[in-house]
Length: 369
Image 1 (cartoon, rainbow, N blue to C red):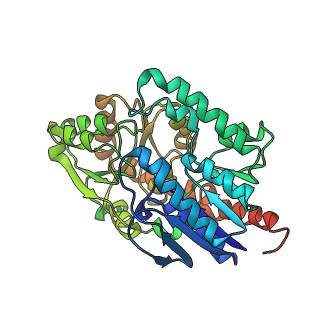
Image 2: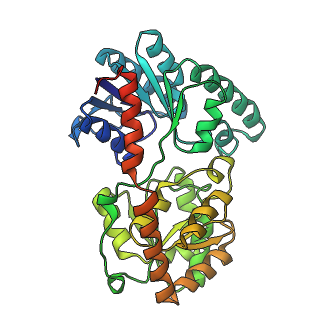
């Protein structure tokens, strides 16, 4: 079956979940193309053709209009049997593809209406109205799309309550990429944060915590707010930051193998509190103890596995205390890292989630592979 995955917001180095899903479908025998807008040209990766419609230009409005139109036209020209999209601004384009006779799958990573309430670039007074408008559009579209792939059971239940066909496919790691037998003694006395970097993802309290520790931060990812980076570079804690930029999967694995603690201290926005962040499971897979936000869902995972410490993510002193507690007790940190790896191997790997996705596509194809 010919399949197109569409993303307007993410460059290919920031789309490991999309490539992972696409590669899983390609291995199952589907003809898969990933359509992006990053200006890096055509490529084949893991059996998936990456089709580039050209770089995004202008600001967010331009991305939501011109870039979306180019992605829509590219998908329509390829005439896939299924269009699988990942960004909410693509909903209008996906509805047009649906009207053109193409089956549509909406891949929902977060609770978008609640996420809008924390968007810094939307004026505060307008956020409730924008949030409600997004919710109305999302609900209208979900009832018409052929399936919803939700990143968490909570999101799946929200769409299932609307009568939509919804499954949850959790973004757990591919173990072969990250599980290594790195000797604990070979790791440096450093902590790491990997992934998207923004104010709501808690980078400011992390940097503020560093002067009260005896460690350095290995920081890798894409900044969504350049002005925030300039602000933090003026803080005392920045002297303890190894600013690694954007890394490929091999680079991510190297950082994980060299560090002793993984940080996932996202702030308590409505969309993050009930999320399952991939970085949490990547840290665990790599044998790192974690320092995580004390959210109920995350508490169940971290305390359940005995793989780390929970903190108030907005409190630099609490983050610093947790870092010091783990780095000053190697045996405890090592044991937590091993417990996290065991939990991932037993419960949080991509293999079973990928099987759910393949089964959905088998249904969409009418029982064909």
